[in-house]
Length: 70
Image 1 (cartoon, rainbow, N blue to C red):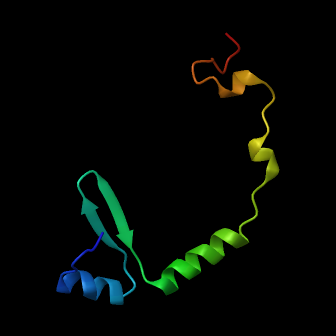
Image 2: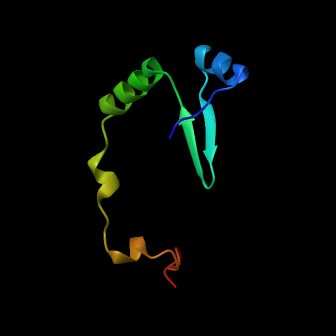
């Protein structure tokens, strides 16, 4: 996909702001490599708490289950 940027989009991009590009039903955000590298480093440095992935039983996964035990 090749996108032609307007002058306003170029100015936004050079100012460090993401540029939204729509292609039919898809939406993309164009960012500079420096912004990508910073975001990637932040994600890589973030430690995920293992307990976020632990469930007591299958009921925790059922969105129709009542919280009051009924």
